[in-house]
Amino acid sequence: MADTPQCIAVDWGTSSLRATLLGSSGQPLGRVARPSGIMAVPNGNFAGELEMACGAWRQAYPDITVLMSGMIGSQQGWIESPYLEAPCDMKGLFASMITVPDVDGQIYIMPGVRARTADGAPEIMRGEETQVGGVITANGVTDGLFCIPGTHSKWIHVRDSQIHDFATFITGEMFSLLKNHSILGRLMDPEDTFNLDSFTQGLERAREAGGLLHRLFSARALGILEEMTKPGLASFLSGQLIGSEIMGARALYGGSDTVQVLTTGMISEPYAHAFDWANISTVPRDAEASALAGIWAAAKHIQEL
Amino acid sequence: MADTPQCIAVDWGTSSLRATLLGSSGQPLGRVARPSGIMAVPNGNFAGELEMACGAWRQAYPDITVLMSGMIGSQQGWIESPYLEAPCDMKGLFASMITVPDVDGQIYIMPGVRARTADGAPEIMRGEETQVGGVITANGVTDGLFCIPGTHSKWIHVRDSQIHDFATFITGEMFSLLKNHSILGRLMDPEDTFNLDSFTQGLERAREAGGLLHRLFSARALGILEEMTKPGLASFLSGQLIGSEIMGARALYGGSDTVQVLTTGMISEPYAHAFDWANISTVPRDAEASALAGIWAAAKHIQEL
Image 1 (cartoon, rainbow over the protein chains, first blue to last red):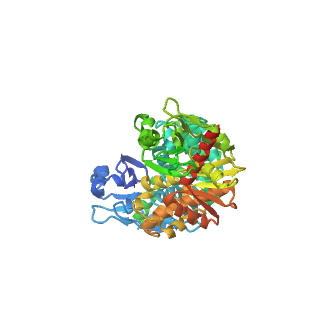
Image 2 (spheres, one colour):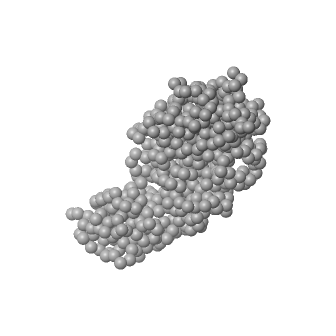
Image 3 (cartoon, each protein chain N blue to C red):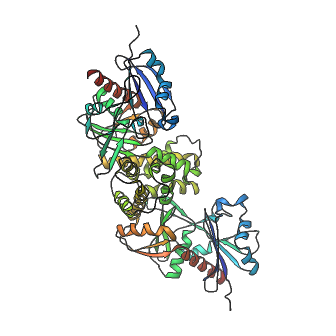
């Protein structure tokens, strides 16, 4: 006998929408992915876009609850869900979900989280809190350091099952900027594949003095002087950036802990090498599964209300 | 009686060409500036472009020597002039000038300079060696640290009238990338004017832990959380970057020396504030006048051959 769907989990970010139908124990029963990130929704018609993604499920199960996380709750999204102040626990997060008004059925949006780094600078995130919540609730990890690599990598410090504080690194966006728009990128092939040797040279370079603005230029000088072959330059740049991220996170959070690394797909490989290089042991977690576990915990919270 | 022109100094970079007619004591007798940087010369017709800029002078003084510096000697320029290895003195630089073949008259191109930072990474420059040479020869500065702010800022360590070593910081290019292409820039007004308070907050942020990839994100978080007004965000970003440059240069070269700062135009003001903030005393120099003095010293070297 088929399992009864319990809710629809929607991870709606800047560049894509992923909807998953979850069964009676939180397991995925079906998936839809669309490239309609919040910036690509015509006329802000989020209701229409959600209907395109999972209208069939909502017709089949009229009372089903939809739980959304990610940039859909930002100023540029559907409805702004406030930032909850860290430290905060999962109960606090779930209690801060907002509902979308004037729609059929119950549609919830997770809050973002804000925090301050040790020096008082503000930090914000949307979506990552749900992934971390999944590892806390589904895997029972109540303390430790989490890394979610990406366009804007997040390092999240969890203590006593709370999101205590966190830090953003614009590693992925910087790579894309430098490769596609800077003078450094002019020497790189658009189709460069991952080159471990050049990547490792980049990691080593990240240890050197003078700061990133200085060190990055060697991606040009090495190319011009033909001390590194062109197919390696993009990996060298990637190594510098990921190395800088890990060194920076170590400066903020220390380096002795095991890090929970939440990734999906291609990004895993370079980060795995970089953590090895830095002698940091890791527990790999699937980012998508963690997000679903976080939404599932939120769904159970709603049922218990 | 009119002075007899001695040579034409051409500073030909990536974005512009500036030609100056120099008199019998190296003083400027006339100037031409064109937006035809080496990347904007149709079909690589550098001879034609030079003719457009100073053909009239060359007709009036048929034997006049042309001395060029900058990216015109790069792989993408007219003829590649080799990189001279630092440490090198002015005589070594002048002796390494190349002449452009198959043209009317004598046209010289200054060499670039290459060096290694303390950790062995390669460095290259073209054009800045001529500016530094001008301060050495015209102002008698035989030792010290030079800073030439710009798209790719150079910090040059001069010892015993030699270019000993140097370091590049991609400060200006990074500002432009982040403001025009990154998510940080989306919150900024294109017409932001310099805001000293926000700039100083950026300088302070540059002192904090976690590295530039982390710190930069506060330009977004402060804007989203409305803890900084939008007109200040670009200056905040600029302060972070220039602050990081100065901190990085200090890590490489120490901070106790007076710095010779070679600037032209608008860039002077933020750097002046940043040096004050860092408690580094400076000697301001006009970058264009320094370049002319360097070319003039090269011209005298040719005359003495």
